[in-house]
Amino acid sequence: MVSNASIVWSDASCANLGAPSATIPLLERAIASAPKRAELHAKLGNVFLDLFDFTRAARAFESALLCDPSLLANRIRLARACNVLGRYAEVLELLDRRTEVDDPVADAGIRHQRATALLGLDRAVEAEAEFRAALACNPHDRHACLGLSKLLRNSGRFAELLSLCDDLAAQGVHHAQLLLDRGRALALHGKMDDAARLLFDRRQVECTRLAPPAGFPDGTTFNAAVALEILGNPFRLSDFPQNEEANRGSARVHHLMCGARPDLVRALLDAIQNAVSSHALALAQTADRESDPWLKAMPRCAHLRPWGLIQRQGDFEEWHTHRGGWLSGVYYVAIPSAVSADGEGRGCIEFGPPPAIAKLSAARIERWRYAPKEGMLLMAPSHYHHHTIATRSREHRISFAFDVVSDDGN
Figure (spheres, rainbow, N blue to C red):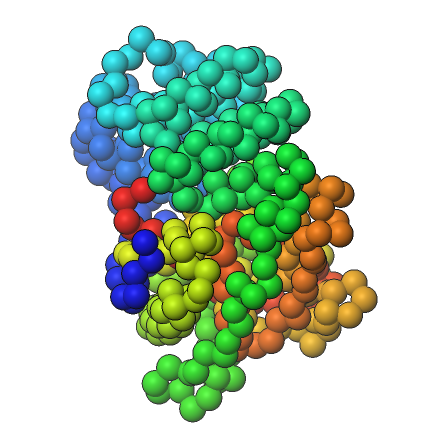
């Protein structure tokens, strides 16, 4: 049931990220003083995961397990790093199924990592069994949902895919990954009208202008300051495994509070939270609130997961969704003059059908482009497929992207 109350916000995820240049040396000195403390090695591993440095993350979690082999969370995180690195046989050895696990969420995490490793070793039948076991342990595990849905889709078992999605929905699952997979299943099963309603509705895309925070005479002055803050942040990430993120040349800033002006970031976060709350209140009053599965999934408690995004020349974002969010959005800080929705759509964001069903649904699910404008905030359901088109400009396209992540417990 959708509540009419505003979303209750907890701290944005960036508030808990320390500067790597300070955190890593601090942890390394602590480890040198107490090399047998598993939690110190694990904290270092988590820092490297935040930096998408899976090689060093794996080393840190290996050290943590040498100190204390019983810590299951470290075992799962090491397995994740090994899977990204293609070390699949190590994952199966690391997560031996003889290990007893009382926590169903942890058990689901183990089975998902095992399934990923089995797929990497071309053992699809065993992987499917693990994905199904993971969902039996925890129906809300979106990673297992993604893996099993992809297996069923790639093997042409569309009726089974739709049945899986319907069964998970009946159990109260409503994350973005399921909404996406159910939309694809409906399309592949021939129910294109239902798929189109779920996968993209332009009426659910909200675009609004943010007023400048107190202390700034106008939006132009505020945006110029934010642009300098994002460009000047020393903790820019640009090297991502392609299967992990949609970035193709663009750089991201996750450690937003670690620049010179964290007050600017806080002001922008507050403005975005207020805009999302107002949008959620309006959505809660719509006539479709009981029939639309995305509206029914609106969180009561949530936090923002934000990042700065820097692009120019040929940089772009591949087609993707934000499977960990409910609502996702982007605030446009600086936009090159070459951006236009005409012709090739240089610099635009474009929504459209998921690539897996693009040919099938070309005439039924529209493509829609938006040419960004400085100071505009665009919001859409997290399960809507979208990508960005390269600007081919030397000027920077700077934006502040975010997911609204539910804290409701599912």
